[in-house]
Length: 267
Image 1: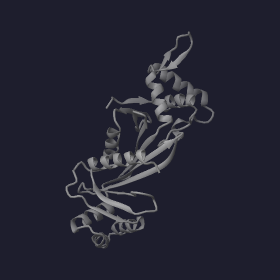
Image 2 (image 1 turned 135 degrees about the vertical axis):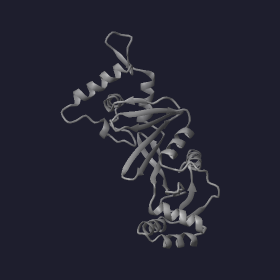
Image 3 (image 1 turned 30 degrees about the vertical axis):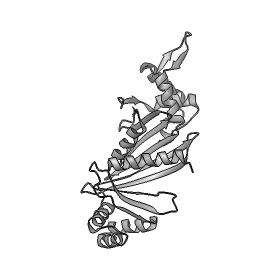
C-alpha cells in the first residue's frame, strides 16, 4: 500500500472540472462545489494548491501547464470507475465513510478527515481494498471457527433486530434457533442486533459513466464481545437474505467472490 496523500477539495474540484464531472460516487458533488459567488476564488485556490504540490507541471510551451501523470490517473479512476466500494460505519453516535474506486488495475482509497482534507491511498490489488473495507466497517479480526449460515427474508431479520433492540432478546433467540442456529450463535446474533459495538455496510457498486448500475450490500453488526455477523442478499433484493458469522478475512473473501462472480457472469 502506498503512502497517503492529502488533497484539498478545491484541488479535486479543479481536476474534475477538466474531466467534466461534478462529483464522484460515494461523495457526491457537495465537497467539490464552489460556494455561491466564489467560483473563481475556489477554482483559483485549487489550481494554486495543485501547482504548489507539483500536481500540475510546466508544459513544453511557456505559460502552458499539464496535470502530472499521477494526478491525471487519479482523476480518471475517480471520475470513471468500474467498481466502487462505499463503506459506511456507525460507531456510537459518529458516522464515517471510506471509498475504494477501481478502474482497470488502478485502485484508489479515499477518506475525509475532520479538517475537510481528503486522504488518498493507492492499493496494488483489489484484495487490499476489500480487506480495508472489511476492517473499516468494524468486522472482527477473530477468525470464524464454525461457520453458521441462516437464510430468511429481510422482514424476518428486521423483526429480530426490532425485538433485540426492544429488550426482547429471548424472542429473537427463539426465532433464530427455529431457523437452525445453535443456542450460542443465536445469543451472539441477538446481542449484535440489540446493542452493536459497531455497525455498517459495504456497498459494492458496479459502475458505468460515473453512475452505479448495480449494488451489492454487505451489512455487518459487531457485538460487544467482538463477534461479527453479516447479512447480504445472495441473489436479488427480493430474494432470501443470508446471515452468517464473519470476520475481516471472511468478509474480504466474500466480497472478492461476489466481484468475481459478477464480472464472469454479469446480470
